[in-house]
Length: 446
Image 1 (cartoon, rainbow, N blue to C red):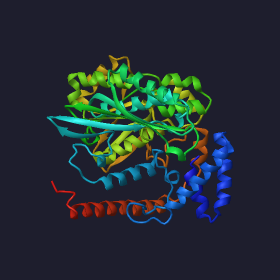
Image 2 (image 1 turned 90 degrees about the vertical axis):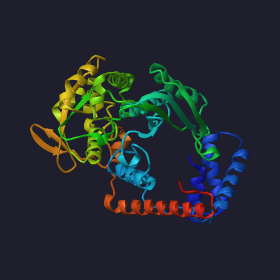
Image 3 (image 1 turned 90 degrees about the horizontal axis):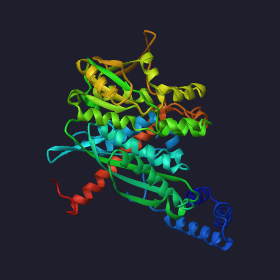
Image 4 (image 1 turned 60 degrees about the vertical axis):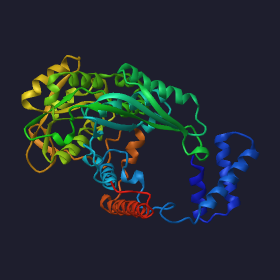
């Protein structure tokens, strides 16, 4: 429970202070189960703090609202709204001197330094694994290492962040860290630094946990999405999913499927490829995560400015059979959900050699499609006919709650206007503050 937001909402509605204090104390008491005097004093202090923030204005205390909520727009749900928001984030960041920047919508970013490519990425833990900290740590670490490997980088270090709400058990920190270091030690990548905080400090009650794990690696040959070329073929490895599939299994009554997700197949496969001479012939790699194949193929086609075609009959056998059975029972579209599979874009002449290297690790791999010239598009071939392969508004609804949420979709085009307005306002603010710093002599042009 966000007590600060609770007070703001009631003050905005015109409720009087004493009634707010009383109702807040009741809510806090339900969670804290502590002395009534403490609950009363705490509630009164929250109201006082929030009152002191009212009326603040200016660049440092306010922002231009989009009037569109995160959930409404599907931010974080790996669909059209999420992709749109991320492209606006890239626009706010602007063009940089990075070798691979955020504007390319790749899995990681890269800069050139000391004759090498330094590659960095960060992934947030799955929000629904808050009550399962070991799984959260394991899967987010595997995800962040995936993002380095698909850029052609050898991971050299991990860093982490964990936030647990005020009433969360301290043990969550330790279990989360154990999950991280299980993957780190297995792949010989050390966890070197991190941060541990409470969510919202004193203002968020409950035991919710969130966090992220980042990684840094070094590469000689980048395999960014922009290197995709017409004439290339698409290879994909088998996948059993990660945090998303584990979440689907837990909350849909299939806990036995979680064990299928506990593997290092993706990372071991990438290690083998990077060590092999054939790696230099690979054009691009990505992990099948962002809205599943629907989302990743769409993003790759947009970045590479090519037409990318996927054959469905070749993709289905690559889904772990236990995971596939669960998805079929739950009527979840496997093409729109994270599978933790490796997607490789390679010239046809090198396809056989790449497949042999992957097979030597015990992981199945097969060709699932191809790249051709044409207007950027993602195409699904099914029974010899082209089918729609555009990402949905959100990724496949993979829990009971998500199936309900997925029934509520607003006017996307209208919401985009508000989001665009807000991103333009953020860019303008950035420029205003930079101008002020230059005028004060704090910032010098390089």
